[in-house]
Length: 286
Length: 344
Image (cartoon, rainbow over all chains, first blue to last red; front, side, top):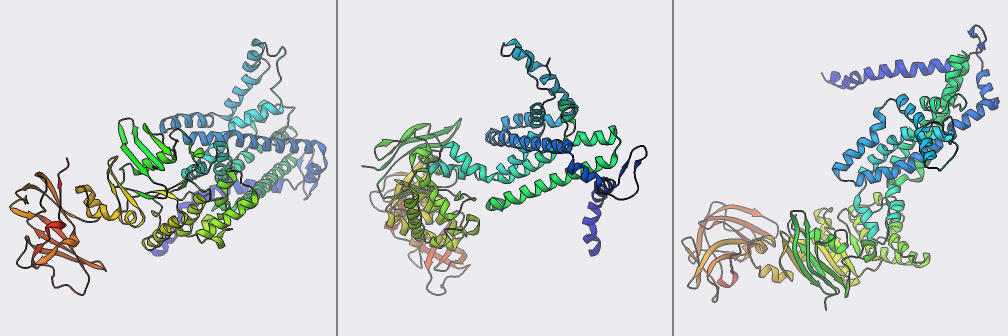
């Protein structure tokens, strides 16, 4: 009886564990394996083990540009999500219960819509014949349409829109734990609102900013649909390049190597940032 | 002239009235306790003085200046919060230095004053610690130091002992009182603990349902409560409702003694448990001992009488002769009874 009860947690978690094993761990291992085989044009995957795919990525400027663009974009999106999401979460937490409920639906709304539909919506807005350009020209602000589709900034804007709810939710969770009296204490000691926000509130929600930032960074670096639709064929990022290698060039091993490299870099950056932030603001993580 | 003047403060939230009327003059250096049950408006009053709540009506005048509309960060008052509200991401020294930084005090003077104030609250060795590494009593002292270092004209304390256990609370009360005397700072403290209010305050302001019920020095308040609420909230009391006629108070079939000059009509007859004595022949009322409780320095008896259950306390000087179940007589002196016209 007693041993049965001790095993219960294992039984309960086993379906999830098996699903993870089958659908996450196994494909990862297979991808890693695939990336170590040579590509033979015509036949596909070769026989002997090789590191040639990784050497290609390390040497070729074409890939350097794509990786730099991907991580530059991910960092910029993360930074913008902080700038937008942290104040947004703070304002939300200060609203009355009724307005908070309404605002929550507005903030989380984007997550309820398919990423493809949402991105096509952005395409309608940002295109040369899109709503934004038509409005700008009608207002006489510009004579030529401003190019926003197929640009770096277009992709960044669309990604921020998609990912900012994750930041808001994470910071929101941190704000719930904040003692509102600390703000009053700072005010009573002579601090104005900007000082209170910068020196009292923000440091205390850093755990939320960190977890939100990690989620946003990882999702931005591996986003596919948004860069594919808004960025198009010319503005390649690592995920769209992987897609092209697998399905366009049929070079599965190189695609697998790119995927592995992306995963490793995202992991390294995330763990590094996590370690750094937790060490710097040790006290607020307790 | 009063140093801090609360003039007809009122706070309403829609239909709900948190503070119905509060007027209070505090002298310089005085230690005033706002005492009352939860929901009596004492914390709202303190928050209005602090500036976090805008009064619906009334004025707050500090040292001749009307500060009613002044923002909290411009008032310069020292506040200790119930939760202490220490900044968890700053060390003890940084917490204490924050108010000086906001005042742009030069770094070396800042360091000196932080050190001085930490010395004052006996926390000098803990300057580099973080709040999470301190005990409850130490945290409270950091909060106190943080409020005092800016040399505020008034110190506001919101239930500062609420988070401490009983033993520590007593120690901190004595320490706080000594500190207040040494610094000589005008202090307003909010508490629901009558013993704490009596220990610390020069003057107790008893509040009930948004109004001031009574105020005065602790001893006066205890000896001369102005009614049923004051007598039962400040200490224990036996209270009977009766009618005053011909030099005595009639409660049911009994006639209880009272001093000459007592007003007529319906009255509350109040007598403290420590004024009651057991008596054989001269008993004013007879009853049976329901319970006898040992409370360390005294014994508490509950006696069922025709007047209801009466409380009697007796100093502990060995095991008492009266036991549970005994039939006893009770008596007290007329001058120990306080007879007040009944408030409606």
